[in-house]
Length: 214
Image (cartoon, rainbow, N blue to C red; front, top):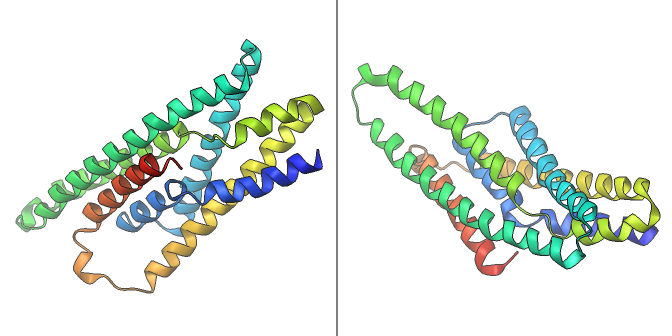
């Protein structure tokens, strides 16, 4: 059991280092000027949903008597769709960023309408990213959960907690460190195009995940 705990700890750290676990939060949070508390809340909830969804799939597989390779197949399918959806979301957000940028050329009398649209888009993008992270697979957790079943359900819960806490902690650490680093650099020339850049980075992240199979 100790080996499983250590494996959950180390694999959780490595798993959370994948760019799709933190980079989208960095660029979206920077573009929408999230404060520290909102960033922590969003990342934590998304991380919990990300790990929890794989636990539910594992439990479903066990209840149906599915073999490990079948459950891993389900997760691989989720991964294929998740990367495509992340690319699509990034492109859509970049397109909205172009629209948002063009709004700055309008007259001041249209300011209220512009702010209303911006707030609405921020809410939509927030929940879309949250859903994509939750939908994304957590493949390394599946074998650990299957292996822990033989030790009883408390072992399954322990593996979930260790992997989940480590994953969320790593996501938070990377996001806040990246935002801290960005706060020390001034990109005044990119200020009006921050949403375009954010969308492009998110799309490229999804593309990298798909190509590299991370």
